[in-house]
Image 1: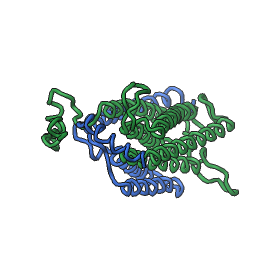
Image 2: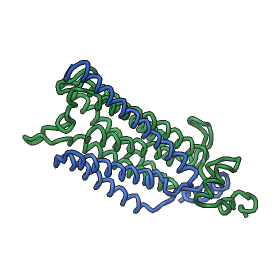
Image 3: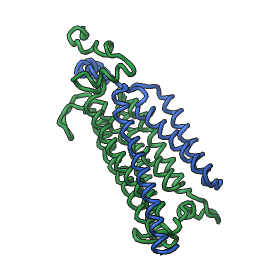
Length: 240
Length: 124
């Protein structure tokens, strides 16, 4: 019935797969991303631009570290915590990594329950994700406080190359800002899911359009990207 | 109960409004497996530092674990594995150009270091 009134429903069947599909999608003189909504496509394009931002930060860090004639502070020692009478290297950073990965897992499940129209589980999982994100930011604030009391400044530190402080504060600060924005977005969308805005077709927030559960997946894309950036920061700044 | 009947009323409407979009619906078990893998890989990359490996072994292990984690997040959590090639190439190919920038700046950094050592001595 609906297939006859809406011819576009049968459209997916006509799309070629693989490289032929890639060529026909881009050459179709219509929308390029056939089965992806504008919201999701634009979030991906935003994330691509954000990739370049973080890419530039990490390249700046690489250049500073490679070109300095002074030894670079050993991150394994700088970020060690004194637990139980011994210095455990990087332990806080490891815990932060696990917290962020866990939040990514709960987010992926929230997307799944969203498409099943399970409002309570979706909202609950999104709030849990936001709580893990807030925990991450809290631990980062602790880490910043610890380093600042030890004398790390953007223009110098007690252990070596002065660029260490500036790159550290810029990269982790920018990432922490992203996490904070993600937490705020998660809470806003979780509230709307809980209230049932996407069932009743209520208009509002950002676009004044009727929302769908796809916004949960789009928020999820942003959140996973924040986790993705942390993977690179963890590898290049803390471990290298 | 009244709530569930309200759901079934709205689903066909929502489906007919957006027929061109396909939902990314995958089993929860898959997410849990990826989650576990990410945990294991993170533990491995932490152990690289904890054990104290150095040199090329350290760097290659860090890169391998990093790329595996990034691949899992993008492919499964962000659903890239199920998207059409038009989107995959549009998003994943441009970041490769960052590698050109990296190559440029590696060359530049060598030059800056050489200049510093030549004109300012071993340590400024």
